[in-house]
Amino acid sequence: MEKIEKEPLLSAKNIKLMTGPLGDQNPITVQVLGICSALAVTVKMKPAIVMAISVMVVLAISNVIISAMRKSIPGRIRIIVQLVVIATMVIIVDQFLKAFAFDVSKQLSVFVGLIITNCIIMGRLEAFALANKPWPAFLDGLGNSWGYGLILIIVSFFREFLGSGSIMGFPVMEKMGVYNFGYEDNGFMILPPMALITVGLIIWFQRSRNKSLIETK
Amino acid sequence: MNFLLKQIKKIKPQFEQGGRFGKLRSVFEGFETFIFVPEKVTSKGSHIRDYMDMKRTMTVVIMALLPALLFGSYNIGLQHTRAFGIEGWSLMQMFWFGFLKILPLIIVSYAVGLGIEFVVAQLRGHEINEGYLVTGMLIPLIMPVDVPLWMVAVSVAFAVIIGKEIFGGTGMNILNPALTARAFLFFSYPGWMTGDKVWIEGLTRGTAVDGFSGATPLVLAKLDEFDRMPSAMDMFIGTIPGSVGETSALAIIIGAVILIATGVGSWRIMLSMTLGGLGMGLLLNLVGSSEYTQLPAYYHLIMGGFAFGAVFMATDPVTAAQTNTGKWIYGALAGIMVVIIRVFNPAYPEGTMLAILLMNVFAPLIDHYVVNASIKRRLKRIKTT
Image (cartoon, rainbow over all chains, first blue to last red; front, side, top):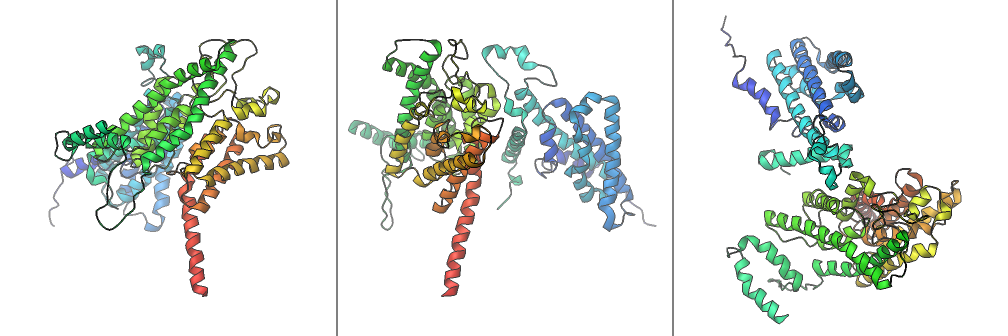
């Protein structure tokens, strides 16, 4: 029997699975997945963070489950199997939020349920979990949801700061007293188009830093 | 002038590639061509270069805007005296009062907009885009007079960076930059862009005399208060509350004549947009049931920003349709959309800005189909013969 070389748990390759999505493999700005929820839940920072954590739980665990079953899932019905797994996870997360964080759950409303349709999750299950072992799949799930959460937090920071004048619900602008000088919150930042423009600006910034991301015509 | 020309010639080598101020080349070039007609000569073959370059075209538009600007200044003074019951101001007094109120808007608009253009031109190492000369004048004319200056600065920065420079500068933008600035302001700070106080100088700070309302005709129409609307003649001359340059259809028509006579503005777009608005108004007169739909169709042309939009905004050569047939379709749809938004959308009393921005987005599509139809027609002709 030949000896199987054991890979260390956090080999360079595995670490790359986690750090890649934070930068050059970012699910939102580079793979352009999961844009819809990035527009919907980023008005305030708190729901955005809760959303990021929910996606992390769902994505990491579904990745592991699908990856563990990958040899026994018939190719023709794999999408349905994936959906069942995701839906189960989402319902668990949704119920958990309703029980322990009702206010945030109400703010997020349908968008927790809509994690099922979040392209990142299906995309990662299809592209990664079906072809890799559970441990790398778990790391990939973590990495991608961190990349997703990072963009969500950046966007929601600017939208909450400029649109509502607060950070994490703390009224920064009011404490600085800028309203006395005639400053007003920018109502446009609260509307979805501004989220799209903010994401666009992040993409612009990222690509001007890393020219290899710019598509050739 | 000769002295100036000599001086410019003298310092020019310093700004060429490798010269002492080589990095500021585009700034120098911008000023030089602003003052004198560029002396570029083609080196191969024979070409005829028209002196009517972009900067001259822009200058014509600025001239066409002057009547609206001058009347707008007078109207600010007039509305101010009416609101606060001031009597005995002469015409010149009203004009100067208004002019001094617009001046800060114009200065902020140009300073911020041109500042960004200069920086971007330096970063990219190309000529300074002259497109902002007109945009910078249009923006103060479509603002309420009482809007805070920092808001103007923010919206101008947004319009120039997001609306224009991201797409590659003048000539590449999809949306009209002036309207982008106004739309940004409209959605960001709605309290300063709608209502019945912002249109009249001083009304946001003081209280008007009894019985005076600063509501524009469009707001009155939206509120179903048709008996309080000014007469059609007042709306045509422009002695009504509204954005700085949009109130007077008369002054705008003078501008339109200048644009059409010099061939700078497209008469097709102006005419088709007018016809579109008029036609939709007439259609509503026939089938509509509410009081707003029964408003005489020509009211839509003289209320709010319709005339200003049709003459100065929709005709923007960059964002309008390029083909002649396309211009007819583009203009007519814009006119129809204005009336539809005004009458049926409960949230927005004015529809000109949104209608033109929407049609800006559709202009390339319209052109695409017009060009394809033309190609098909010609192919058919070849096949049959």
